[in-house]
Amino acid sequence: MVTVVVLYHSSHGSVEAMAHEISDALEFHGANVKLRTFEKKHEHQQIISKTDLIECDALAFGTPTRFGMMAAQAKAFWETTSDLWIKGQLIDKPACVFSSSSSMHGGNEATLLNLSLPLLHHGMMLLGVPYDVPELLSTRSGGTPYGATHVAGSDNSSELSECEKKICRAVGTRLFNIASKLK
Image (cartoon, rainbow, N blue to C red; front, side, top):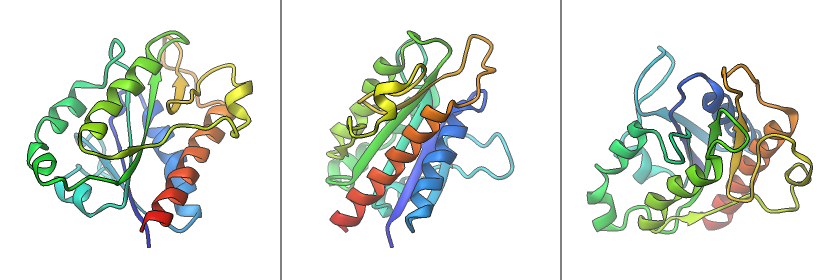
């Protein structure tokens, strides 16, 4: 069985909703999904550990955009993983990234690239969203070839659009398929 960690930080719930869409797709295909966060805000949440990363077959990683960068909580965690990097413990694990911003041009693509950097340094294989996902061509909100995105609105009131949900599920399906082939 493929084990996938879906690691996220969510300030207002949008990134958490995206994490659940990705998780639903992974579970639909039979993956063992471990939803993890960097800090516990709700009783049901579990905090990420380095052991989670070592033991997983794949990783989905998302945060809201912070001026085109990942949330500070995520950066602080990745800065503790040098021991994994030295030992090469994440090399060749497939991974994808996802983010949410308050506006269409609020930094989602820059954030996806920023989220990718520690994964690439760890030798992980980064998966984007290929253009055979039709919603990537028709979305009027989130979705990029770099990863799934969401536009939450300036007051964070916008729920995930159907296109955004489908892109999240497509990302989860692709991550499962690649991880299954590599296992």
